[in-house]
Amino acid sequence: MSIKAVISVIMYILLAPVAGGLMEGLDRKLSARMQGRIGPPILQPFYDLRKLMNKQVISVSVLQSSLLLCYLALMIFTGAIFFAGSDILMCLFVLTTASTFMYFAAVVTSSPYNTIASSRELIQIMTYEPAVLMAGVGFYLVAGTFSVAKIASSSTVMLTRMPGLFASFVLILLIKMRKSPFDVSTSHHAHQELVMGVKTEMGAQNLAIFTITEWYENAFLMGIVALFVVTSNPLSFVGAALLCAAVFFFLVLADNACARVKWGQMLKMTWLFTFFASGVNLLILMLIR
Amino acid sequence: MGKVKKSPWVLHYDGSSCNGCDIEVLACLTPVYDAERFGIINTGDPLQADIFLITGGINTQNKAVVEQLYDQMPRPKVVVAVGTCACTGGIFKECYNILGGADTTVPVDIYVPGCAARPQAIIDGLIQAIELFQKRSDKHDKIERRHKEEEERKAHDKVSGK
Image (cartoon, rainbow over the protein chains, first blue to last red):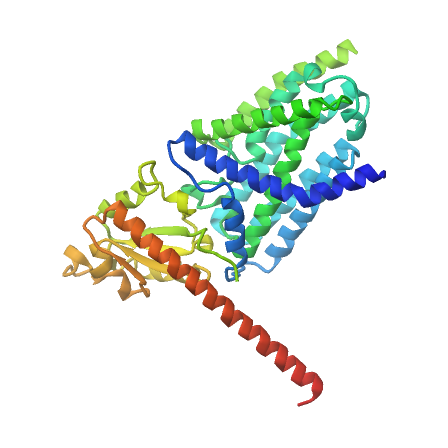
């Protein structure tokens, strides 16, 4: 591993929670403005985190904290693989393993809300996985390698060769970042029919760990979005930042403009879109090469 | 230790309210009043709540529910009774099934009168609750610290054979 890779991994571990927290703060502010409200301060997610660390810990299950810590560790590991410039396919597999720990952390409490929400979480994983894997394969077909470092230093802008794969990746970001219309297992807003979904039995420090993990995850996902644009040209980083901002704005807009759908509709819509957009894109890539 | 008053999360429970106060509580979250600018979130999950907001009187059927919700909230916590019914039992006070205000079941800290309580009054009550929440949090930290110090002293005494 080169020194550059070590530095970017350390930067990821230190800065990803800050970026993720700011993203959430910006999200809440932007949502409030879209609804004609003033909204909380941008740093509100950090205030929430500090509060959560100061509350009495009530654990429904002894296993929950350790499972959540595994979730956090695996999520950091996922990001580390990615920002070290290593194998993107490996990275996506570790991401799924992390999500599985999230499922276990929810289901271990055996509360009825958590049981329903965690089965929905599994359906969510099933729903977004094809699009994620196809994006990985797409990178391979265009760049001829799974290595993130080599993909990022190629001369072609990936987005021009894989627009369909990008579109379905943005669609599944709605699921991954728990935005309407696909926030079926939990959401950032009051979620009355399942209380707080998978987060229902998490309080105080446990919820804090969950929140930090989500921040790591969101920062990592934005990294993948950036990978669609980054090339050997240093100017491409500006393009990547712009693309990330545009995608983020789209996610917040969709969150505010859509009502939540049922899990069946989510599965159908996402798979159909992935099948056509990603599938056709992959077919073209394979035939033209 | 930390400043917790910037992030008060509210759990709203409707006792036997006529829904007048509940609508006013929800009005606090709308663009006109926007309680979220103080970091207030309407959570619906007792495990994540800091302020317990009760509207309506307590009746024989929901007494157990209110007690359980209060017990499920982690310390430090504050209870706010919103509306005349939650404060005293109000117009329903003499009914055969009504026990009275929220303070018949859980220790109420802040009373917000009104039938229905106005959003301005509710937000004022919440701001007072937030200050109390910060005070309780400081106290909670002090007690925790004392417990820790005592435990350390005990462990030290054990080692030194006293």
